[in-house]
Image 1 (tube, rainbow, N blue to C red):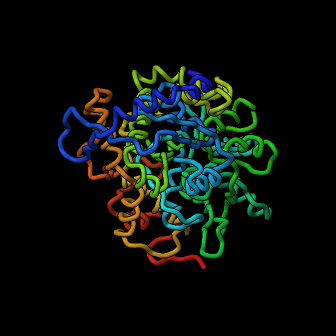
Image 2 (cartoon, one colour):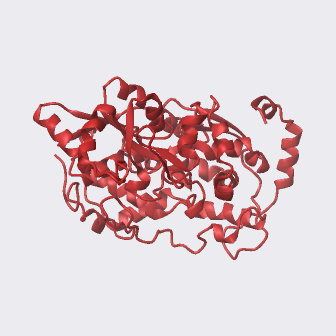
Image 3 (spheres, rainbow, N blue to C red):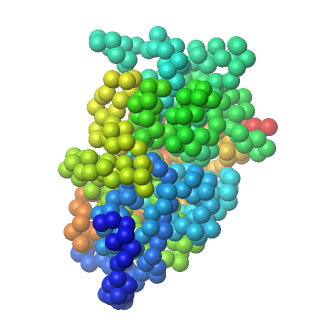
Amino acid sequence: MDNEKKALINTDMRALFKSCLAGLALTVAGGLSNSYAVGELEKDELKFGFIKLTDMAPLAIAYEKGFFEDEGLYVTIEPQANWKVLLDRVIDGELDGAHMLAGQPLGATIGFGTKADIVTAFSMDLNGNAITVSNDVWAEMKPNIAKDANGKPVHPIKADALKPIVDRFKEEGKQFKMGMVFPVSTHNYELRYWLAAGGIHPGFYSKTDITGQIDADAFLSVTPPPQMPSTLEAGTIFGYCVGEPWNQQAVFKGIGVPVVTDYEIWKNNPEKVFGVSAAWAKANPNTHIAVIKALIRAAKWLDDNNDANRPEAVKILSQSEYVGADYEVIANSMTGTFEYEKGDKRELPDFNVFYRYYATYPYYSDAIWYLTQMRRWGQITDEKSDQWFHEIAKKVYRPDVYLAAAKELLGEGKISKEDMPWDTDGYRAPQTHFIDNITFDGHTPNAYLEKFDIGLKGSDSVK
């Protein structure tokens, strides 16, 4: 359905839908019965924000497939200039909610940058990022990388292969500059993780210096996602970490080479979330659940039947009002493959995951991983107890809202019981699939930080 038709939906239809919903009780706790219903919607006309990345797909699909309308919601979806503008507009109430970096609700809640209470009840996807370097850097890295029998690079490629180039820059008195999308972005933490695992210090933050470049070997700075390829081409940066389609865009333009995906840095890592202000969530509990219902259905549609809907999703995302990149560029990663060096396209079916592996569930342990990285690099300046990590995670992540939505969908026959982790305590089992083989257990964040050679831990601080 096109936007003009959606805009002309009869207001009488809205009123009728709302009256049908009126008086229905919300059931959150209890067994998995066949009857769950959202109470009357507090607000039915909503505006959501997003950044032009393929992982905004659940919002686009919920809109295009009528899942929002099925819940009595009349939604406008609007691209935003950058992550800061997006967050500010959610805080100010100009947006009802938004596609957010997983670190944004956490960073805002603890007061790193903008201070505000933001919550999330929905994880939008797993994986979806990569680290790209310029052609010149790649040419220097290649001799340091093992080759397979066909002469192709063996993946995953570790930052060990980059370290000699970074060391040369230091010896020549030059800065090795790399881009990431925002200080509390997944991209920042993944890039730092990869670099540090290869012995390259990505720099610290402090109370008085928020550049993140204290003691750095590689100097990271913010570049908006769509500008990454052009900034790389201009030589302002020598590499970057970003979501799709901006790594594949570098391949298509012939200006850079993706060397590692975040799937290879941390298998099935949580990427974006859907965030709302805590005040909005409190004022609109039924609307919130209805939104999450629509997003769960969209995520399921994206992964249904072994990703059979992905070509249609790519066609939708390629439209200018969404991502606006060429179909071929988006399809390169969204349809089960990923192209590294030009012509080196490999099968990577889980590069983008939207529903399987409980991708949409807001795990407390996911929040805690991000908080550990904020502490590791000095965005959290002082030592915190394990209890503090758990309390912040539970303040920001709202699995109760998620499960209320899921129970309704189950009762309506729109999802299967096995689709959801109904009995979880909110913590994933210890995760072992990291590029440095360090195990993460969300129950013990400080013990996790002690495992790293590079980074703050315990009572460490940066002056």
